[in-house]
Amino acid sequence: NNSAAYETPFTVSVDLIGYGCTTGISASDRAKTVKALVDPATRPEELGKPGHIFPLRAKRGGVLRRTGHTEAAIDLARLAGLNAAGVLVEIMNEDGSMARLPDLVEVAKRFDLKLVSIEDLISYRLANESLIERDMGIDLPTEYGDFHLQAYKQINTNEMHLAVVKGEWEPDEPVLVRVHSSSTLGDIFGFKFDSGNPIKHALRMIEKEGKGVVLYMNQNARGQRLIHEMSMLQKDGVTDQPLNRKFGLKMDTKDYGVGAQILRDLGISKIKLISNNPQKRVGLIGYGLEILEYVEMKKL
Image (cartoon, rainbow, N blue to C red; front, side, top):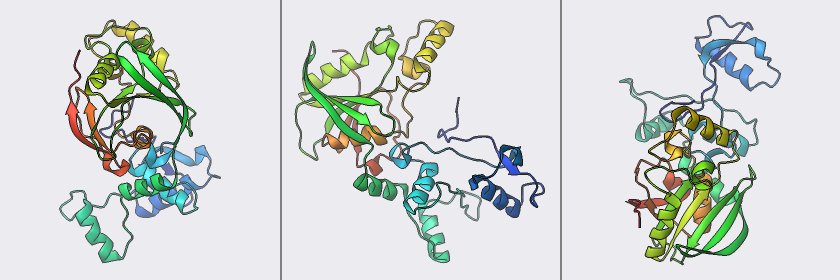
């Protein structure tokens, strides 16, 4: 039920109890709380809730799963061979606004600090590791045309994702791409909504184009997703929009790492994205991908 603007993974705020801490609000108290949080010997009863320190949970896979500062802090600590913990601090300008990159460059120069971007960290990790590996690939004749079906295993979760591929392309050629987040009721049982079957429409568009990819991201294995879909339908009844969007089951808007690695493995760097809901895609350039165009989903 995280409705934060950027889906920042907050948990319950805390303060260290005792050990010289008073109200928990001072810099000294906050530093002691942070040290307690990263100490595996700290017991739950030693932390008061709510407090003045806001713990965050990084996604497994780091910035290759989510291009967030939380994941970046953990990745940097791990790459340095340290305990997987970090502290995030927002640097403010004199006028109270949040410092942006040009401001941070000046701060780094003034205090002789190292400065690294999330894009730099992503580029380094992508060059040195991967979260995917190719599995089985087969020819896939369909009523919409002949395609190639390539399976990919996500090695940190064992989930299997699928790429339905048509044709070939040059390394810098823009490629028509549809990214689909799985929905059991919609994909397998054909639950009806006004937009029709998005996979069917995308395959027809790609067949007409002569080349392209439908990337099927498997999220059915995540927790109680199917039960959640069923219970929401029981509560709200028939919907006039795709289940993923209606019930908040779409892919995290920052969760591009795995899909991006699959597209990169297929030799894609420039995308013509099939979508009726254009939105800002945060951090895509860090994955070596660029959206050149949004293409409206058409019922062919």
